[in-house]
Structures are given as structure tokens and as C-alpha cells.
Image (tube, rainbow, N blue to C red; front, side, top):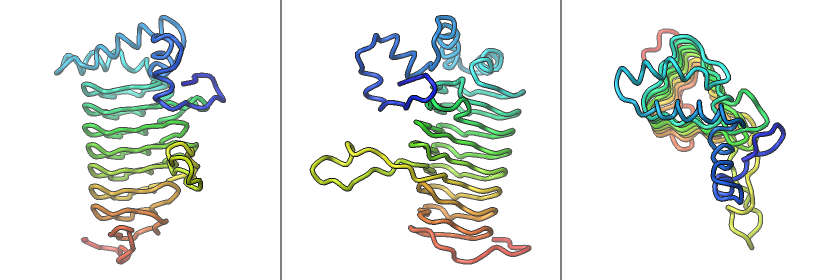
Amino acid sequence: MAILSGQAVEKTHAAVTGDRSALARYRSVIVGRPGFLNLLYFEWCIWLSSVPGALGLLLRKLFWPRLFGSCGRKVYFGANVTLMHPHRIHIGDGSVIGNGCILDARNADLERVIVLGEDVVLSHGVMISCKNGSVTVGRSVGIGSYTVIHSTTHSPVRIGDDAIVASHCYIVGGGDYNMDRLEIPIAQQGQRATGETRVEDGVWLGAHVTIVGGVSVGKHSVVGAGSVVVKPLPPLAICVGAPARVVRLRTEGDGS
């Protein structure tokens, strides 16, 4: 797992099981920065991750902000949060990172890999994972429990302001495997970029919605629970199904 600018992130298995020392692999995969003091401070903060109750909230509020590329005021961190390359994560004022969240910012090409706007709420167990990708979340966004947002192969994911993302959603940028060759397994053929995935301002995604790489959901649209979005959706649309289709457009005073 390279930490120098311009170098691609290796497969996790190769980075974890490589020929380097265990400490070097840990620094590369988890901490993301050289230096013994950086390692010590990271270890102290991660130890605080499991401290329960009000004491844990207070200690993390005091010590964790220094881990990040930037961290606003009144940010709260729940227990058992997992961080990878936290110096590439930027968090706005008033955000809440719920218990058990995973923030994986492994992209050696960028210093702003995961960017959370002001008043973002990540509910219990949310995973934001970037392997050579990036995720940007706008202001006042709520992301439901166990949602996964995954960006890879330089295909960013962007979520606009005031969006609502219900629980167990899956939003991906990149990650499509090449499968042209039949003589080798698909897993060995590498992945291709899909381009940017966008969830625009004011969108409401129901539970268990999947959005594949390279598509967009227009402003103030609604995507029903369990839908699979495989092509761009227009603004103000109400969409359901797998694949998702527009059933009608929202109008002024719509109570649906």
C-alpha cells in the first residue's frame, strides 16, 4: 500500500501479506504516514476508540481531530470507529460519526479523499471506502446504518447537500471488473473506471437501494426501497424497481 503521491494502492491482501516487516505493512495499510510520533498518536487514538460511554465521547472529541486532514468544531465520534489513512479525511462542523463506522481513505494520489460537509450524520456501521477513489458528502446529509459507499479506480462518488440515504444502501464508483478473457478468472482481469457517480442535492434514497458506478440521480428525486439504479435519473423523479424506472415526477404540494 503505497503512501507516496502518484502511486496506486495495492490490493489489500498483497499489502497485508507482503515481504515488508509487520510494522511497515501496518503503517502503510492503516496509518498511512511515516514517522514514529505519527504512529504513537494514531495508536493512542485508536485505543480511545473502544472507551465506552460519555468518557469515550469526551476523549475522542479532545484527541481525534488532530488525526484528520481537517476537522471542524463540535464533531462527535462514536465507539469502535475504524480509520485508515485519517490524514486524508476532512470533516465539517457539527458532524457525527456513529458507532462502528469505517472510514477508509486509501488513495495515495489525493490529500482530500473522504470529505464530509457540515452537519453530516453517519449512522451505526456506515462504511466509506476509497481505494484509488474519493467520496464527497455535502452539507446536512444523513446516511443510514450499514450503508456502504465505495469508490475505486479513480471513479469518485459525490452526494449533494440535504440528501437522505436510508439504511443498507450501496453506492459505488468504479469497481466493474473486466471480463473479456475466458482463460483466466474475472478477479484477475482487473477493474475499469466507470466515471463519477452522483447523488444530487435533496435526493431521498430508500432502504437497500443500489446505485452502480457512473450514473447520477437528479436533484430532489426519490428512489424507492430495494431499487437498483443502473442509468441516470432526472430531477424530481419518483423511481422504483430493479432496474429503477421513473413512475412519475414530483409536483408542487406533492404529499407522496
